[in-house]
Length: 225
Image 1 (tube, rainbow, N blue to C red):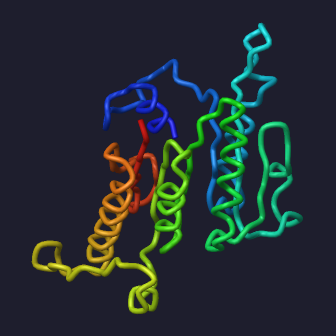
Image 2 (cartoon, rainbow, N blue to C red):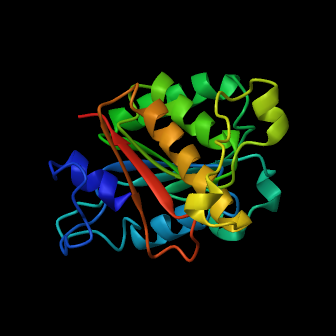
């Protein structure tokens, strides 16, 4: 998210925002898609609570965090319960009706001078494609931060639910190692998502984040300038 905001504020495409000591979220509407237990939303809401970010002149960070997942509201942790700067929405992300609903929510947040950014952390299979579809179909979403997880399931590839297909692994190059073969296709999947995202905006970058404690640490960032 920091990288996305850095580039939206005029930072060089592909540049590194980690060195920006003065960086902080401001006027952001963060959509945490497939939030699970909502750690991203909880941390964002706590770290950017309006009361804690008031500069003494009545000015706040003006951020809002929305978690979306299919867990029933009464099953989510207490820190995800609706608050002044956060909300949980119990929805099926694969439902077609969510597009219209989210479009309306995004419009309301734009009226409050917030910049919508879609976040998908470790989304499994076709859920990553779904995140890119939201970005494509709702132009008012100005940025997307996507970290894919596992590949689409085999039956999803066979039935045409996704156009992605695993590549033939060159084990002579990678080494006769099943783990290397899995990583080969993981990064092939990441490249597929990057190309898919590029249809909506030319400002797309992909990198690996060494702070993730996994070899599947690819991140794709897309912004509309």
